[in-house]
Image (cartoon, rainbow, N blue to C red; front, side, top):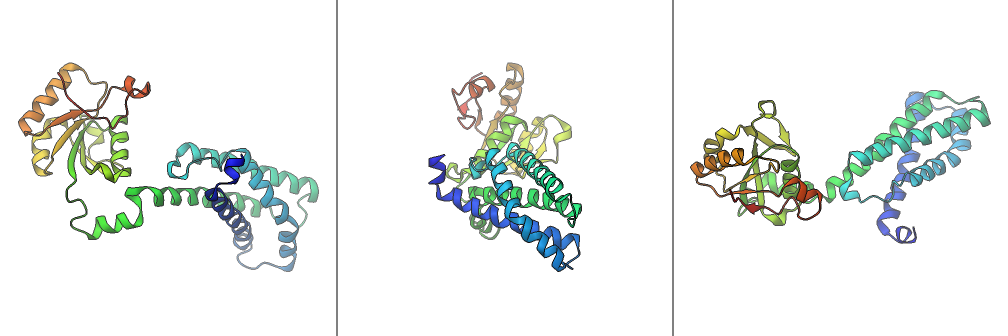
Length: 272
């Protein structure tokens, strides 16, 4: 905890949260009363905001919302925010009911406040993640759209397997531009995946189309991202890659990845 309190980033996000929570509460009154806030409602805000904000921050702290690494904000973090928002809103509603019996207070305000809190708190963390990711930063996005040479020198890679291993591989390629690898697409024999996208990388077709797609997309290397593939399937795909005259590699097995022996990005030559 002492380390956290000495962290400058913690105080930045904590201060931003205070501002957003105040904004959410004020906006909830503005939305509920369509901008016509009377003196009575202003008094209600004054006599309630002083304990509403600390309660929310305390519950957020208990749900460990300030111990995450913003770069890696995930679905589990969003679920945690939903839980913290629900508990804090329920606690505040209960206090208003016990202390004030909801006399002079609108129930709709607290419903709107809970929704805005969820949107603001989760939204700011998503924005931070997007800004911190190398491939998603505004400067890199600008370069990728307006510079013709933004990918010059990058190895163009076609990935066979639009599953978990392929997703992990593309995510690392996009987050780490120093790898100098550009994923141009996926191939997968599941026809339902064709045309879909993973991290904005399209599934272009089936593995039997590897020769045509390799030539169309000017692919420099093929990576087989199906750790559980059988020997027979591997030989079939490798034969196709030979026809395309492009080097072919594979990712480690699922067991090696889960056991921590290797990382998904440790691509190796294929040995049949």
